Image (cartoon, rainbow, N blue to C red):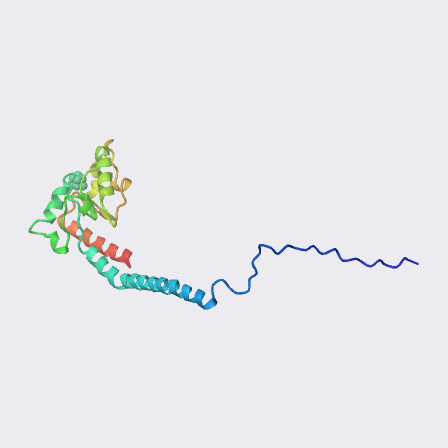
Amino acid sequence: MSAPAKAIEAPPTVAIPSAGVAEVTAPAVPFLEIEGLRSQQFIPAAKEALTSLLAERAHGKLIRPVFNWAGRNSLFPLHWGLACCAIEFASAFGARWDAERFGVVPRSSPRQCDLLIVNGTVTWKVAHKLITLYEQMPEPKWVIAMGNCATGGGPFRTAYSVVPGVDKLVPVDVYIAGCPPRPEALLDGILKLEELIRERQE
Ligand code: SF4
């Protein structure tokens, strides 16, 4: 027969001194006061968030389309000519073709321009200047390669000194073929660019 099991004794209790420990009988700040503080901070923050959200939506729905429409109908090309195509570029702004009726106004500073019309043969020697001018233009900005030289090097494509297409240096949005393209072709290219901008803005 096995021996009867011994009763397990409870461990002796250790008295924890209570001196120095404050007894919590009530919350430090009453509940209503906490709620009051919360609402004081929460309501202005919520108001501010809601106002900015509404302003953002109003900006997106009302103001942004107006800015987009104005921007694409008032392109400012850089007043810059590279070779014989530049003569056609200049003609497009003369009395006969009057490109300004489309809101296209050449400016002399790249900081005021949003359109770079590359109108001639781009040599490697001028390449870094072209890139600098492009980088000085503010966003959003667009590029038209006008004529065969700007598009792909043209008759000088195999020359050691000629860039075989300006898209090797900057992103091109519209290409205009011709050697040289006539002013009507430039106007057509500008209108196509406006259409492209409209599609991208939607
Ligand atoms: S495309 Fe023709 S007209 Fe235009 S810059 Fe070149 S060579 Fe001159």
